[in-house]
Length: 122
Image 1 (cartoon, one colour):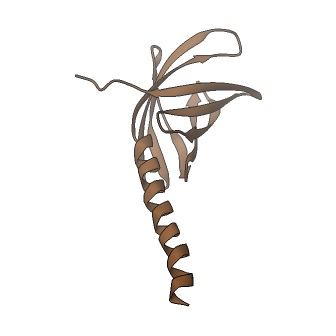
Image 2: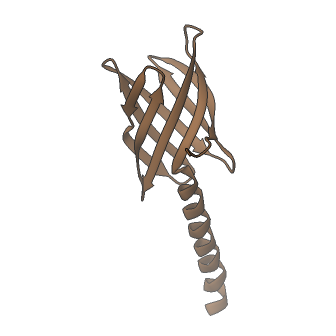
């Protein structure tokens, strides 16, 4: 009986440790180029901080900086929104080993981009 319980418990512990590493990897500075529905390219740097299942931070473009609002992390997926000029832009992402896939809703038009870890400031 003890042996039957050991394997599932050990696997669960391994999963929890792995999930903790994945969540820790999202914290930090990430950069991407977003191609807007109008065809413009926008350089964006996201600065994320993960605390449990809460995601906070900022998104910075040449035009300025906005906060990451309503951020949530669930395993290897995350969601948040940014508000620019009164318009909310929901973001949905997935964390991979060396990047993040990110889908952004521009008023019903979905844009996909890939975040790459940005170099640390000197």
